[in-house]
Image (cartoon, rainbow, N blue to C red; front, side, top):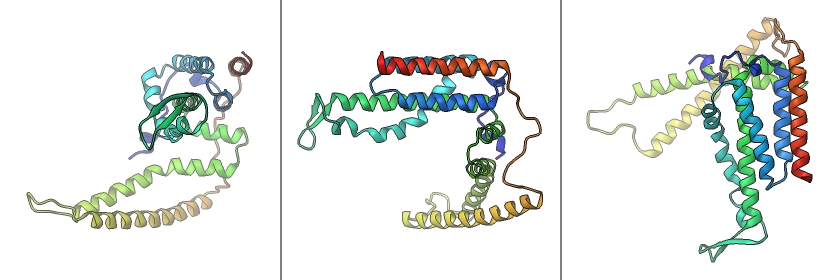
Length: 263
């Protein structure tokens, strides 16, 4: 597995691809903050925010289906709020004949749907950011806006060496398969408890190998002059287009927030 197989960046020559990485990261954070500050039930504001996402997808020329499919990753996490319709007090919407009659409240449903929509929109803009910005540029932008250096280093190493762990897991699975031969027509693999025991041993072995490799990699990096940050030879520069994008999007987000609270 090569490291580029895990990279979600899509090559392109669009306006968003050429923006300064710092601007793209700042605008993404401002967008997600604006979504979180939008009150529950402000569906008109959600529509306006989603329209900004659609404009970004169109300008980036990365495909609407590409972004929408990857944004579905937020659905399982948002379902953690599934209890809200049953626990938030308010006007009853329906009653389910379960457990003595569960009452679904209108404010609870509104809050639950709002969380789903807000999560989906936020993940979409994050997908757009990753699609139009190479990962090394993202790391450089995080350092440039003074995100704590240890946090940036952790993210950097996790991403850079994830493919090494994947290779290690594949080798371990291949070794297990080579030691689990079976006669034709006979089910291989043993009982469930045996499979669980083997999986636990493999997980423990992978953890030990990861610690050992991390020590070797870190010592090798120290020997080559590593001081806590990856340096970039060709740093991006701030241009008038970056300033224009920063002002336009910030003004739009501010207007949507004002409309959602006082409209």
